[in-house]
Length: 344
Image (cartoon, rainbow, N blue to C red; front, side, top):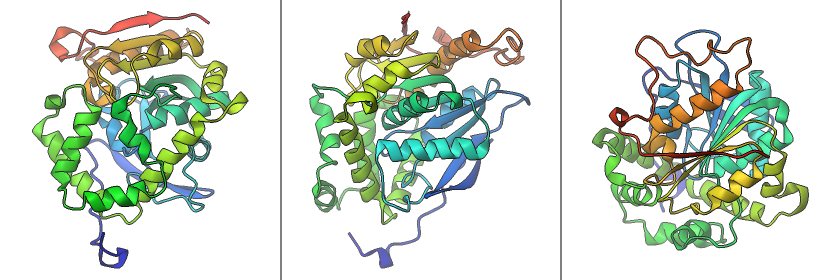
């Protein structure tokens, strides 16, 4: 890799129509927050946390579908997206959760409808467990919770946590183009990569090119992967499964049948640990169902929101606009979903 001093300046982060970016400085970190104001005032706040190697852009499709229901904000975790590395270099699950908590406290928007995917699902679980006052509902898409038998396809990602592997991988793949890297990521994360539109692929390549110019890109990836693996080793009250049992907020769990990073078999275990949760399984989805099948995830969240809404504001927060409420019907292109509700 060329020295940092000769790396070109990264391009600006893409901002979709209707979105805004702002910077939030909290103790120890500076966070970039992507927001999508609701079409009507008074919508309840929602907050989204991305996965390893992702950014707030991962939530743009879902945020657009929910703009009539919630006031959305998505964070770039420290070292990802447009957020610089944390001051102390701490990329543990606890540190990421602390950053999210401080961001929510600074905005004074809580309690929020909290979303998390993959690494962000582990972070959101910890936030909901230790700060129930900040979380109204919890939606987890393929959360990275501890697995004893990891899928073979997830092993290379886990190896990033091993010291020295990230620099080695960087050297071995220095000839790869941004297009090759993006195709590799999509083949790993999507149940069906062909669902990605040409425009979406082009945007992903542009974002990959931007990230590769950041001198801390691989360090943030490796340290966050190490932090995630380390969290799997924690027992007692700090263990993620134990904290899942402490979550009081109504919880929606979304799992993809073709997920190569989080085992589909973990869906039932998660449903048992999160009390009173509802489980949506999408047989054809991969690791990022909110990007692959955003209409289906949006519809499932609307049901969660409707049930969690009190009598005083029922019908005010989830009523569809004049064009109707997008759902998982055949005309949306969504998959057949299996929905289960557990009582705990």
